[in-house]
Image (cartoon, rainbow, N blue to C red; front, side):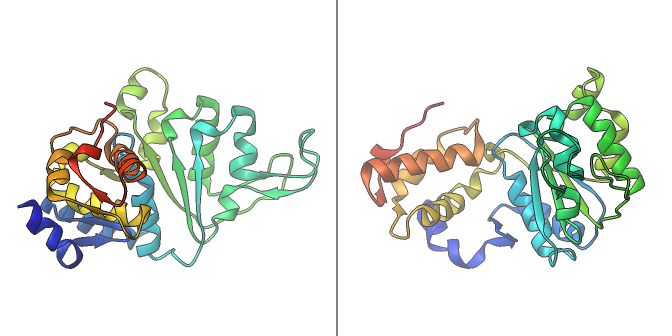
Length: 258
């Protein structure tokens, strides 16, 4: 069966942007994503870390009606709370000691395109309120400025935490959740789509090295794992095998850390 999967990887996989699948369940999800890509309503992507949420966001952008504009990604967990307003909305010269010039924020950078807010669950509550106001009013003001801007931006947010639990614990605003989750998509973990493993492994190997290939026996070994870190873990396993054992991956080169 694995030999047949390898032989048909190039011709029969369903695609959505850079995403691909042989799984009927994922193909149905791609159909939903295609419908969503034709509209500009906010999308909330949820799923475990490593399930490809940013790739799905980029595919929604590239396949949709706003692809002529920029795709701007912001990792909310990597932005200091006191810099959030500047990061998203920009700042005027002199707005704070380090503001030596006027700069656009992510909303203006994404004008006519897509703003991807990754790890939205990590946003502090005060910053959540400012984001909610911007989403509801459509108005953007740079920090330290009074001029109002109205960028046309499609917002896609992503979370690997359960936002319903975060709401119950008082760590995420319910009103912001409903503002972001107009269109809601759950991306399944790799263990729920193992029929895609051969396809994903082959695609990842080709990105790592044009000469890379996987033996059927190595694919069988890959199929035995549960991948708690999902596609990111699969990529790490393949990278390690290529570095240590060369371009033709055999079962002995497959090592799991989890």
